[in-house]
Image (tube, rainbow, N blue to C red; front, side, top):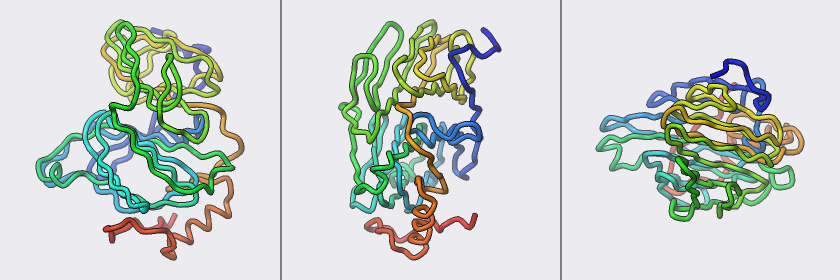
Length: 294
């Protein structure tokens, strides 16, 4: 295994760990050297975390603009509630795609029965920035059960096409721009070539032991490939990998708290709207996360 980055890799990101009290996340994007990969502008690895009885996640209602959120779980359950009136448990392998557009509010909590019994949680929370022409689109929410998300089996490899088209399969998830998001489970000794026709693509090692063109990528690290470059992933042990990227997104984006925008004025307006309680409310929820002071 080589310690020298191969020509196929442009950047290796070691995510920063953030303790959220009940559990830890590792944030790969945004990074000081790379704000986004394709449309992906936020990439949090949640857990794995074990919650004892009486504990769980409880993310109070908070707003978003200019982005879409993708919640994807390897294990556990999260209940999503939003200002459009949707209440949807998210389970392993299902896809929650929430487009904020001009503005949406949602909460994310552990189900009451799992809070009572204790639970396990492991997954990825990602955001994609919207194209400039869709930043002020109507908010919407779609849920795709795991049975609707296609998969492909290759020797020693199982591939789930969460978003986009890859390995001869297309996901039903309707993204706002060309996006690829794939879960890969690999047996020891298995190999897989990444798609080479993607403008920007990152390989994230969830667990196990993998190499990319001979370079060892530790678990919890992200390798950003050079544009439209294919690389070979080899599993040295049973491993889980995520592929995330898509077409290069035009223009600059400002990311502040839960807001993404190509316009600083629009972002500042969103801040004021949250302070002035002009965002819609989540039915049945009275709590909310205050606007950060920084």
